[in-house]
Amino acid sequence: MSNESGEIQRLRRTIEQLSDQMIRSKEQEERTLTEFSDMNNELVTLQRLLAKNNNSLEAARQQAVDAGDSKIAFIAGISHDFRTPLNGILGMAEMLKLSPLSEEQENSVSVIQDAAKLLLKLIQDLLDLSKLEAGQMRLELGEVDLQETINYIVRLLEPQVRKNGNQLSIDCDPRISTLLEGDSTRITQILINLIQNANKFTSEGTVRIRVTLMKDDEITQMIRFEVEDTGIGISEEDQNQLFQPYVQTEQGRSSEYGGTGLGLSICKSLVTLMEGQIGVDSQEGEGSTFWFELTLGKKDGNQSANQSVASAQKHQGQDMDDEAPSVSVLLADDNVINRQLVMLQLKKLGITQVDAVVNGEEAIAAFLSKKYSLILMDYMMPVMDGLEATRKIRSIEMDEMRHTTPIIAMTGNVMQGEKDKCMEAGMNDFIGKPFTLEILSKMIEKWQQSSEPTEVLNMSIVHEIAELNTDGDRTLLGMLLDMYRTDTPGKIEVLRRHIVSGDHVAATEVAHDLKSGSLSLGIRYLSTLFAQIEQFAKEGQSRKAEPLLDALLPAYQAACAALQRVSKD
View 1 (cartoon, one colour):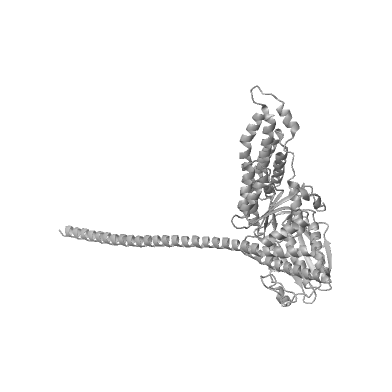
View 2 (cartoon, helix red, strand yellow):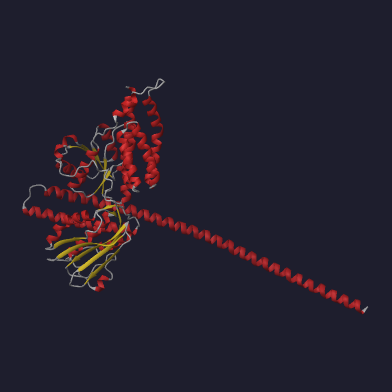
């Protein structure tokens, strides 16, 4: 019995141990479930916080975008508001200077011009800084002819340099390629700023421009630009903070020199945008050398930037008075001073057939009642702005199969985004306020020549097709025209999308196809437009083809109308 009793005791203890383990296991399971539930609750809470943070971040991002858009809109409005009255001041002063004046009066007009130009420079610096801070400054890559750029700058600034008693000298490395690729406008802007600074702080001395080849390979050249002066120099302390916004040297802050302290900051930002470097070497009292280095792409000199868009343009030198009787202009501008100024400028150019209106609605009404050689359209006007008026005019031309009238935007808002809006609306070109008589003259000359009648069809090819008979009642020319009408509008729209999106390969293929189809029907002018676009796209410069896009549909419609008449005859 004792053995049996011992066995029972062992079994009891084993059962108790198992029960105890089961209880502890159950408790552990409950604790684990509790911990899991707590963790799950924490996870849910974190998810809610994350969602809330995401919403906050999205709201903050949208707020930043809205703030950026508001800033851009503000910059655009300020640009227009400042430049519009400045256009009147500079333009009227220019017109006044062309009239007979006494020496005292001529000096007074020169003071007005100098003061207005200084104000314009200060405004431009502020707007450039705002665009750079907003990330809206964009490079416009194209051909850079450094020799031509330097020559232009010398012609522009040499009178100022001589007025200060200084000599301007040039040293340009002959190893530099004739044509390079970069942003010629920004390079010019930087050089002008540095040269004007050098001249401002130098008297009875020398300002020297040096352009040197630093590195040369198969596809690029590194160029170093230096502007050296013999002026007052810059202390080491001032050099350390020289390229910051609104920072000027102690001497530069004096009323003798003036300025905002923005010029060098903008130069640095532009050089950085072009992935270059900028700096200064100077000793106080011994002059300064400001320099910047840029790597520019090489271009094939034989291509010479496809000047096909402007190939019909003639340079100034023609007597515009000879063409005056055939030029009629519609001027749309709500600012009375600018209307008077432009009408005086046009009269000075020998153009007297001018109708002036104050808003877009009046511009459309005038366009419907009379044929104009050219339309000068202000961007911002009450009732209907220049963009909407242009869209409606282009729609009328398309509906009524009219010849396209060149429309030139006139605005004080010179930001690239606003220029793009003008082109998208159907305008042909852009002239920024303030503009001189010479600029206006060149613009009118350019588009007056471009609007001259072109040979729509190659009649020898058309007649050959027309003389071929078919077995049915319809002529072969009529059948081919119907096929052409079916396919071409859609292809033109596809071409437009490829050009705007920068798909060079696809644009080349579509443009070539359209060119070939047009040539086979004897469509001359439209095929030349397709050929120009094809060439631009081949070279990866689709942006240069964008101004041609608006000419395609009117040219297509004119060709179809001409072929229809031949087919009926």
